[in-house]
Length: 191
Length: 186
Image 1 (cartoon, each protein chain N blue to C red):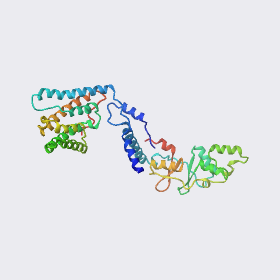
Image 2: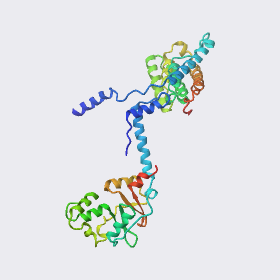
Image 3: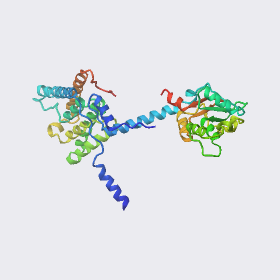
Image 4: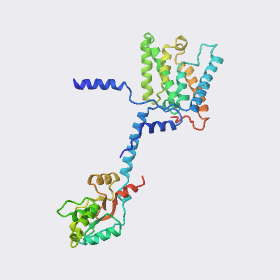
């Protein structure tokens, strides 16, 4: 992430500074950019997943029926939940995207929720019938793309960007679920 | 060949300049710079007129004019801080006198060595003060009245003059609310 000031920004800042500044606007701009980048890197390295994660996690098990998963996600207003086995290990994630994939079947893949709505209107059969007898373990994305409690903000952002995901379960050194970190948590982070 | 042409083009391109000049300072800044410059030079010139004119000594040298630009007109610049003002002038004066003593048979060489070594030494000691170059040069080409002073040149006019100008800078530059001097001493 970079914030590139314009030449006008630099000149305005120099004007606001009383007295003669012994530096050209171009050099000041270069110095500013380097300082900003350095500060950002430092902050990104300092903040860890455990500092920003949400500890109250709504989770499901591999054998949780999909309709239960849907109800939980709807009630708790979350767009994804981790799937945890009976030993407490994270085995996968179920997100809205996984539901869309499961509902798409062999036909054209549904791209978003409105695609699903359109399918419901067009289809003579009940679209959601496909999901009646399956469980979270059948539709989850596995293995889960997880972060560790000690993962830095920089690593989390890179992971979100690289895998195009919106949340990741946070696992502790014993490989157990410690929380969940989402893009919203990153945005809310106090730098 | 293509690479050489590219390097040559790049070499001349750098001469065009790529940035712009900093903004002009406001009217109050100009006023305080004017007042400081006037009082600083007046102080050394007055003392010269009162106590030195009848002797063979001098108190005012040309490089003080350049120092005045910095310590009254660009007071935030690292080049204008007391460390640089005093250190730069004293080191350069010493190098200037030494150069003259060692190379006075070749004045052109003594002048070049004095200025060049002064620059390097000021950079190495974090006391870079551009008027120091003039102080070193004056020690070599300033004529018999200056060269006759020998190492005393470092104390007077250089040391004494710089000290007077620094006192004026401390007094004048700290009067306005938004101005402060120095940024640091050491």
